[in-house]
Image (cartoon, rainbow, N blue to C red; front, side, top):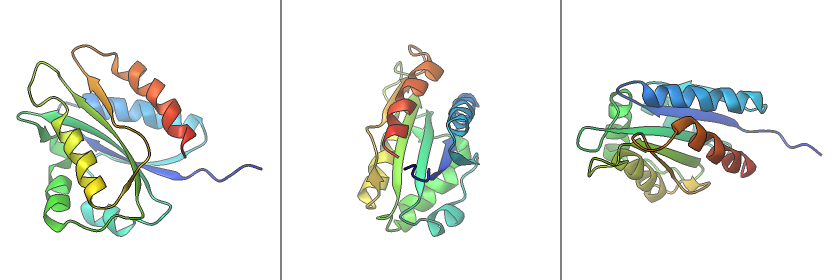
Length: 153
């Protein structure tokens, strides 16, 4: 008996485009595995939060920029999430945090997003993946992690 695969909303926080490229690679892999995905290169708070049901799955690819801030494409979404604090109990999510370990704010935006969603009641599917752009092969590390992530859906 085959179960229905959930639709995965991929939220992208990027400034330089590296995390967008990584999210596109994950999107390709997920669609090849038969998942339906929706890419959110500039996530819209109202659209995404109002659509949350028990069948909602977010995969957030979050780059840290500057002093640990969210990538530009997700600044407004993150600001709204912190200010409005919506109940997200039905939501399932996973976070890929991208940063550079030479900075003391390494992966801070991704860590903040993970912590915030958990505090708002969302259900973390798996431990956050942290990718060090100065040391890791981002696509390889994310691809390996994605195999574990899809097993939980």
